Length: 400
View 1 (cartoon, rainbow, N blue to C red):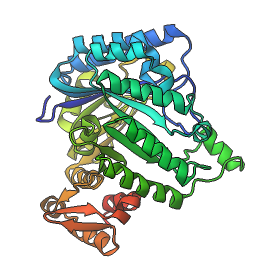
View 2: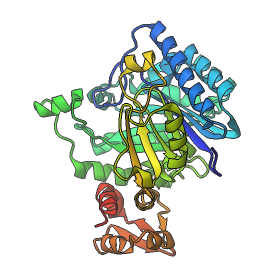
View 3: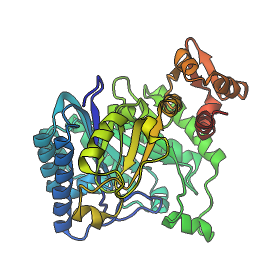
View 4: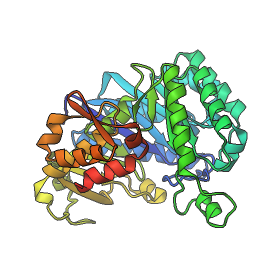
């Protein structure tokens, strides 16, 4: 299977030095180096299965996320080499590796450059040691800055992740983090307001009153400041939470927002395929009825979203098992989803596409509420709509 945009391949590495206080991703501390080697073997087996299914012949982006992929060390290089042997990467494919400051020594940066990694995403989160402590991060600001500067010196394209709205984080602290992030020369910056996820250590701390509940108004003020400072530095917002210098937008993440097929490998990973491609694989592999039945209306589906179970031990034992869950989307649902995802982008969506989807009335209602606006032949979010994105996206999906 191929399309003009190819297929995006995501590889989830489920290991970290330690679990951060706010994280609810499928990850944990590895049980020795042997487990990490076993994971690489399992991931390569799963990728080999997708190759045999004919779905990795045109890979336009490759993204290693986690977890902390660089915790694998040399095993990450073996994983990358094994993937290159098993899939057809486009000559200009974007290859991104997520990392954290404490697992990115200079020699690893040099090796990543040598093996063709084109982009690194650094989980910095803040330049304030107090904020980092609240988040349960394992690095300090000095280490983060040193690694960012080493990435810049290597010539590697790199992105920084920052979190705002953290309890105890002041506007002055946030401004300093933004200014220091800009000074590193990063070509891409992601800005996320803190979300307290149920079951995480941070959630428990908030529940018992050890940590204050994040204030959404403070987070909104910080998001506005981020857009002001980053834009002034030539790093422009192109999506709800993402900023880039012209030409340095994340091609992999953009694939998610623009309907490009993607395959997720590893425990807890998610995939999306055209229904015809999924159906062909599911019939060949005997997935239907094991362990789940077709969802209602699946016969009319044109797109399927599905995911692998998140239990790491089970994945290491059987990496090519059937999906743990799947959602079958009809043509109408796909069109609505694409409009919703398109509104995440600063460029917005075409008027003609909205009319074809039968959502003109919904977007007109959002416009009356000050959440959307028309700009030429496109609909896009206003500043208020950007800050209240969840309301916008929910109303589009609900058709209200």
